Image 1: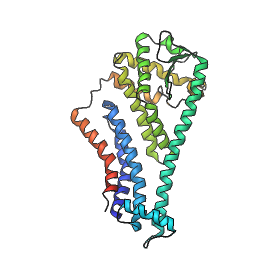
Image 2 (image 1 turned 180 degrees about the horizontal axis):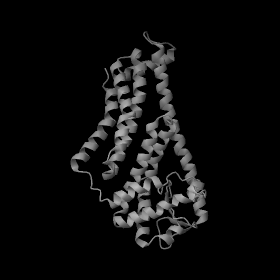
Image 3 (image 1 turned 180 degrees about the vertical axis):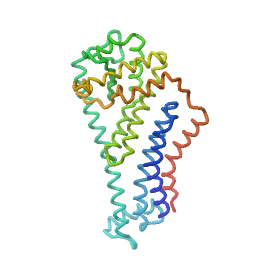
Length: 318
């Protein structure tokens, strides 16, 4: 199993550094943001499995010929309080590190989701008290009394809301407003907050891991582009680009020291971040072509291979 442990370690290193850097710098993701998002997810999942798997397999070498039989043997040795012949300090440390790393990632993920749910519930309460429903709207759109042009979505288990400011309503025309609302509702339908929370958790758990920050930023931009593509079904590209640019100025109130309602209530996604506005507007006005069939097939294949490779290495180990 030593060969498998080394193979998983190499795969973990490749997925932790060169592959994410190449993907973050690639030109094709704006042409197929959904595929790029799936690839980022497969990189993160396969990287985690490979990292934990390499430590686990190395530590299991004295216990059996395959990971499955070795895990069964570990249970027996734990119950008996013994160690097999050939067990080393390095192997035992590797097993402990594998368990600690897996527990750290899972507990951090759970804590991130629990904390986000509490923030959303509190925010829903505040929005219910401090906002009014949008006239002639029956899909949970709320209006807050704020001068800055603000638009965001507030997901929830049994209730969701699209929140707009009066400043936004006075700034945008009917077409631009329709595009903004369609964009925010696309976030809710496609459950983008779950994807963002997963990568936020990864970054939080591995703060010493520089690529985690790059992955979180790249994914944030991709989900915005996916929501833009849904809004493009409602309005033309120029109208949507103008609306994005106007809504993007909402961050200025936070920079100048005036805390926005989103920041005060703990909203996790910031869809009007200045870092996200420019690439989105350029994509809409630049007439970016869709990714071709061959390139799409290659991206899908890469996603599937990355997901299956570490699992195949673990299952087929002899």
